[in-house]
Amino acid sequence: MDSVPKYTRIFLWRHPETQGVKDGRYFGHTDVPLTRRGKQQVTAILRRMANEKLSAVYSSDLQRCRLLAEAIARRNSPRRKVEVLEALRELNLGDWEGLSYKEIVNKYPHDLAARLENLAQHRISGGESLEDLATRVVPAFQGMVGANPGGNICVIAHAGVNRVFLCKLLGAPLERLFRIEQEYACLNLIDVYDDGIPVIKLMNHPLKVEET
Image 1 (tube, one colour):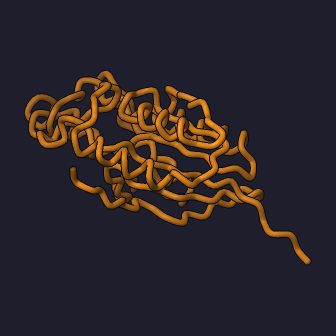
Image 2 (tube, rainbow, N blue to C red):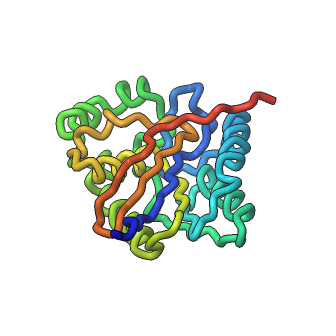
């Protein structure tokens, strides 16, 4: 009888809601804290992950990801140490950091127009392009999977990071990146088989948050 194919399972989360969201502000490398709802989402994620046996926990080094990852790792049996990776940081927004879309339109209209014209390759002034992001994100995920064959790994990252990885798995060009939604505290569940073939089991899966 043929053996059951082995796979590495990735629990890929977007971090919970952050301060500034109600004002429509964009943050990449800026280290912003969670909102009250974001902290409630942490509780919901911990409840979802409570019975999962993890071989490793990975996180962006920014607090909106790292604090959640540390809480998951503490509750795992056996307890894990979070492997913090700067490569998992959100896209560097450069001069756009902390601005709303309206402010970007008013202050950097030419930069915005150039980005809309060439979404994958245009490098935001003082920041990164989507191709820059993919250059650091994709090898990081490949390394995580390679280090945990047949294991369950939890990754806490950002919307841009997750979208880039999901585009890679789907074979979609980066220009299609924004066709993939990533809500705050959503779960993406991915099985990567020994032959390297990935299967996306869940994408942008929301959790029920109990209001307190």
